[in-house]
Image (cartoon, rainbow, N blue to C red):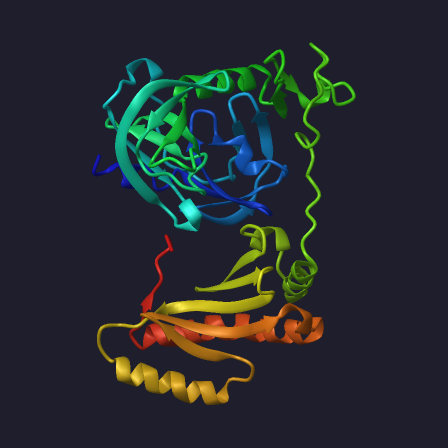
Length: 362
């Protein structure tokens, strides 16, 4: 399985909503992105990001609370790598597998293991039980066999267990694809009672037209996102600087912005009530470090409201470490503008001095 990551890298997608992040993967034959329903639950416009394209807003086309699946619209004009779908009939205990995803936001993380049990009944659905380590953020990613075929969708873990992970078998994914395409790829959902896939336009007053089951309230519309007071202020500042706030959300109380080659991050901790804003620039090289340190210290004397620091090998430019009650919108806008401008400017300067850019996977 040594070439698996290279094969899948262009097909693995990171998915973000106001409530968290997860993983998806591209199915070329259907031109869709597959993920878990619980990854995108609450929004019909998740943010997607891949190796071949920057953050963009997608649309949820299909949801399935029975199998915990969702299909998203793929970005236009991107020839992402096709990945083959295997067969659940060939799954057996002891088979080697690999899970690829973005656990805790760590991109393109691969873990290996074996199938512990090929069929484990859970809430009326058979899952593949695996011992490969999967964590929050892995949900929706592919489970891959030793032939580099997708044989499942990584779905959940037992939090108290030791490497107890479960993946939906690929045959259930194929069934959902057939049902969705059978409706002409209309925006649709699977009824949790009669299991029929129904188009949004056929839902009658939020009820299934076949059996009368109530459709989940936010299946076809966004759940209201109500950030904390500090979160509202941060988002007002980010919007005022000129960014689409939907593209910056990377979970509750966390925002990321790309400015040129630099990455800006903002976080808020409701427990200690501190807001942090910083830019990740690049890494120190193995040589010429003294000249770079001298440059950073001299520039620190010139920077107003900003400061450089080095964390291990990473060069950081920090703009804000402030108590939430002390945040002033107007001052925050000025400071963020300065941070965004200077982060990209200094990143270019430092790379020319020999510093090492962060890779796209970080």
